[in-house]
Image (cartoon, rainbow, N blue to C red; front, side, top):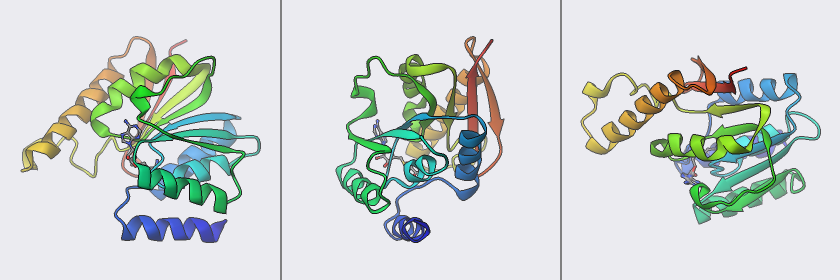
Amino acid sequence: MKQHILEMEKYAKEKNVPIIETESIAYIMKYIKLNNVKSILEIGSAIGYSAILMASSSKEVKVTTIERDETRYMECLKNVKKCGLEKEVNVVFQDALEVNLTGVTYDLIFIDAAKGQYKKFFEKFKYFLAPDGVIITDNLKFHGYVGKKETIESKNLRGIVDKIESYIDFLKNNDEFETEFIDIGDGISVSKRKK
Ligand code: SAM
């Protein structure tokens, strides 16, 4: 298992596939253990790195992970198989915004896909969150660009940063959810329903 994880890290580096930072996945794995999380929905599998680590963090954890890029989806399937986690990790090849879920809820929803669509993902998937569940979002610092828009030359990049900043505002001013922002890795948020 350890060897497979190291190989995935190497592959991600060589092929420029973005994967979660070590500190952030360590935080999520600890959260899973401490809070007895059993069911997880991940938006954005890439090659399965975080899905595999989440699934292996505690017994009885089941992960459904969604990926829209075919090459990454295939690589993800391959990695899940190599790690012997086919029963624990269900990989779905689809755009998350087009996925139809019915009659399921998740203890943890991990948003780690297109940065410009975070709010849409949150609004869509909050209906599938268990009552005491949590929505965790990655990359809220977006490699240090968030809060430093004036230093960015690329219009495209500025647009993404704009969207992340407005997602942060949306979380801060949300009537339904309370959010803690944690300054580890690339910045994560942990949102729970207000009691
Ligand atoms: N969670 C992965 C990990 O840490 O190992 C990394 C995911 S990577 C940052 C984001 C992935 O989300 C990309 O592979 C991208 O193709 C996928 N993605 C982006 N928008 C998506 C969407 N609307 N539906 C499904 N997948 C999407």
